[in-house]
Image 1 (cartoon, rainbow, N blue to C red):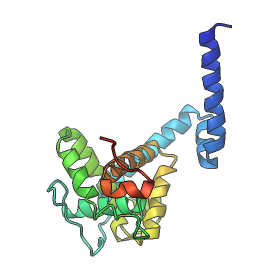
Image 2: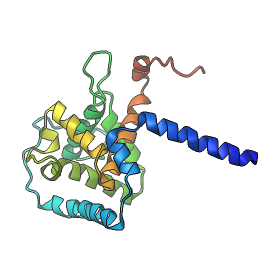
Image 3: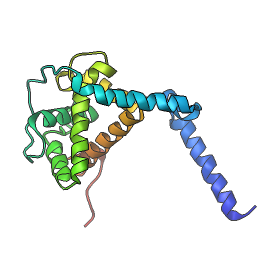
Length: 200
C-alpha cells in the first residue's frame, strides 16, 4: 500500500475516533443521520421564514440596564444585546473571572466591525436584531433576549448552537468566535487560564 494512502487512512481513522468521543447525541444525529433533499429544503425554508417574520414580531421592553458602546459603532440597544451575549458565553460568577463587558468586549468588537465591509456590518446588526426578537419563535416567550435572566440567556444561546437550522448554528459560531477572540486577547484574562504572557 502506498505511503500516502496509509497516511490518509490513518487520518480518517483518527478523526472517526475523535468524533466518537466528543460528539454529543444531538451532534451525532445531525451528522450521522442521512438527510433527504426534502429535509434540507424544509430546514432552509424554516430559516427563511424566521428571518422574514422577525420584523413582524412586536417589540417588547428591553432590559432596563442599557449598555452604551463607547466605540460608537453599536446603538445602545445593539450594545445591550451584544453585552448579554458576551456574558452568556463567559459568565463571571467569581471574582477570578473578569467580566467580559467591563473588559470592553463590546467596544472591541465594534472597532473590529467598523473596519469591516459595509455588507458584513449590516449582517451583524441584523443578527443582533434577530437574536433580540426571535425568542418568541424559538423559545416560546415574548421576553426579548436583553430582558431575560442570566440563566435563560445561556439556555437560549445554547439553543442556537444546537439548532437543526444551519443559519442559527452559523450565527452562534460567529458570535462565539468574536466574543472569545476579543476576550482572551486581553492580558487581564491570561492569569485565569494559566498563561504568563508572551516571552518577548
